[in-house]
Image (cartoon, rainbow, N blue to C red):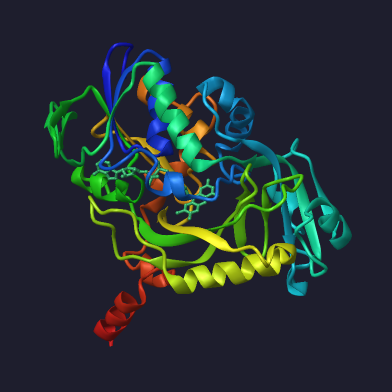
Length: 390
Ligand SMILES: Cc1cc2nc3c(=O)[nH]c(=O)nc-3n(C[C@H](O)[C@H](O)[C@H](O)COP(=O)(O)OP(=O)(O)OC[C@H]3O[C@@H](n4cnc5c(N)ncnc54)[C@H](O)[C@@H]3O)c2cc1C
């Protein structure tokens, strides 16, 4: 276990690694974050900002922490509470059925009819059919939040080294003793690998199979519009938020699958066809915003695991290594994932949640062909694998 004064290297300066560094540093642990690019420049700064993951074992901690994060970090995250989800497709009118089974007890929510949706979401139109208002969850600004973690971690003494790519590990006595990088060697007592879609490749260097399927996802941003009472509005296959300045920032499928992501690759570029599809669906969801021009767009890589759940585990061998990759829910869960990683590194066990569902062991029986079975391959790879099996 890492004691106060021991040194922890965190690979990856996204929200998971930065939150872990902040939690560790405020516990008195000496932490260095190694980031191949710039902090928050990958998925962590490019996502929808949603903080509402009621199906995760980390949900209660996510909900407990977000309303306090500006105060705890000392920098703004632009967190806002609550969310409305509504539909514009008759076939999904009863989408809320089953939510009562999925939302844990103690979290309030209500069903809305189309009129109530229009009252609460002024940019919605006559096509709004039904919705739900969640009186929990919310959204925050991904770029501000990434920066806030980095600054807060540094305030507690953490070192953040940008443009340092991790390429391998040195072992001594069955443990990782140092990290090999593009800028030389960094010794460590404990290691956290929170490298987003590259976590699987780094885990493989330590002899662990962490199945992952990276995919490109995209977002668009409109010019500012009058502020709605609640900025977190989803539906019609879209997720997003209205920024404090009034811009609508929205993303949604389809995911475009990659075979793998090179260890040191830059973020992907958006594609015109996905962006046009997103703009069309935003206009359908929020017809009173249909006139708004799209002023920005970007793409990011989603780090999917086969069951869509994160992996957060302190390995038994080497036993000074903790893996954390978040499978598309890492922004919202970041206050809690950092806390969990801190607990695993310092105490060997998470103090507030049962992480057994997030362990690697659940993939022990995974079919070697799982990506093809889930249809999670790029079209050219799927075609090639079909040709080969004929
Ligand atoms: C378009 C989009 C929308 C999303 N919407 C939401 C949402 O609304 N809510 C939500 O909770 N989640 C959302 N997500 C998912 C969320 O963004 C991720 O789960 C989260 O950002 C993961 O954070 P991370 O720090 O684990 O990984 P990343 O943000 O990927 O950070 C990993 C970091 O590790 C660095 N790295 C990788 N390899 C190396 C190496 N070899 N050496 C050094 N550094 C390395 C990378 O440069 C990167 O900065 C969305 C993602 C996308 C792309």
